[in-house]
Length: 174
Image 1 (cartoon, rainbow, N blue to C red):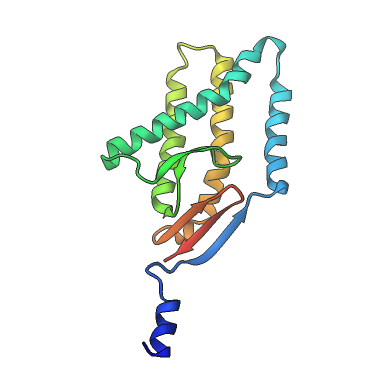
Image 2 (cartoon, rainbow, N blue to C red):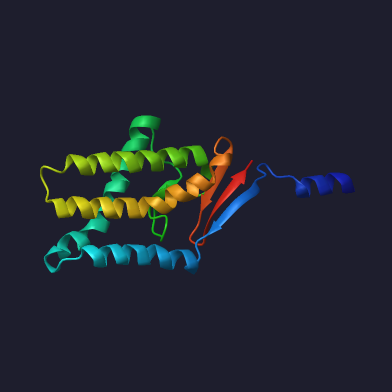
C-alpha cells in the first residue's frame, strides 16, 4: 500500500460527523433550574399537600416512559432499538443511546408534551385540583429544558443528529 492510500484509509471513516452546537449541562444551568422549581413549590406549598409533591415527579417519569413506548409502537410500529431509560438532570427518561435524528427526538418530545398535558387534563374529573396542578408543574418542568435545547437545534433539524450525554447535549451534521 502506498503512503497516499495509507493516509486516506487512516483519515476515512464510514460516518463523518461535524459538531454544529454543544450545550453543556453546567452547574450554572442546573442550579437555576432547581431554584425555579423550589420557588414555585414554596409559593404553593401547603402542609396538607405533601403527597402530590412527593409522588408527582415519579408519576410523571413513569407516564413519560409509557407514552414514549406507545409512540414507538403505534407510529413506527417497532421496538425502540437504540433507546433506553437513562437518569439525568435535564434528560431523564427513555432517550437515544447514541446519535439520533433531531427530527425524531423533537417529534417524540413534542408528542410527549402535548399528549401528556391532554391526558392530565382528562384526569380533572377524577383527581383533586391540587394533583392536577402538581402533575402539570412537574410535566412542564421536566420537558421545558428538552424543548428549549431542541428549539436551539432547529436550524439543523432536517439532517442533524443529536447526542445526549450526562455532561452535554450535542448537535451534529453528517
